[in-house]
Image 1 (tube, rainbow, N blue to C red):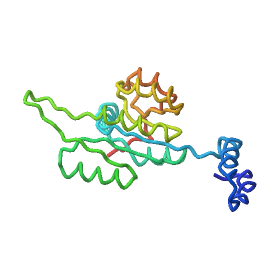
Image 2 (image 1 turned 90 degrees about the vertical axis):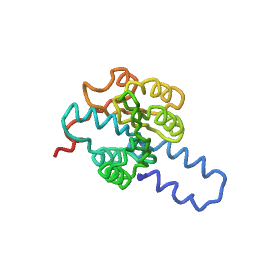
Image 3 (image 1 turned 90 degrees about the horizontal axis):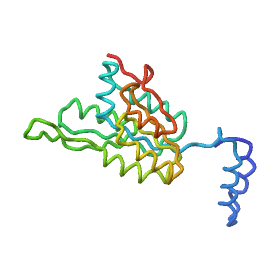
Image 4 (image 1 turned 135 degrees about the vertical axis):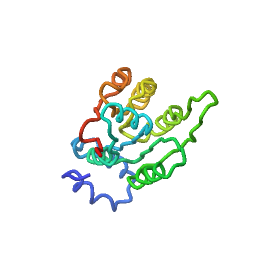
Length: 195
């Protein structure tokens, strides 16, 4: 945090006074909003992003561009990417790229049912992690178009007074999710990886 108010309180840092936390809080509250660093928690629903971006644009989602966009808006203090582990080398390489960007990659095994259908969604895991993170951050960013998260976003906005942002593919993001968030950011050209 930069700005003239910092210079005024910086000299007080050496003072062992019990008033230091109060002064810091007061200075933070009086600082212009543009000087405050927003603490961001990012939750990326990898499967949803993969399928909606492929369906909407016939290409891939650019996680590095998303990271850069959010890092310019605040400090990413937590970042999770939720994926299905099929055990193939290309997926493992992709997961390593996510880790290098700064994501904690959470994996679930791919389960093929006897009837041919597959199971492997992360809705409950994402929900638990968002509920855990919401009290520690200023903003929750969900990269998913899954309408199952609409009640989650409503809840954290009410209980934690946290700002919410959803990144999703236009036309493939649930309207209930768009209505539940403070800000909807459509996934468009700047967030796409074209081959």
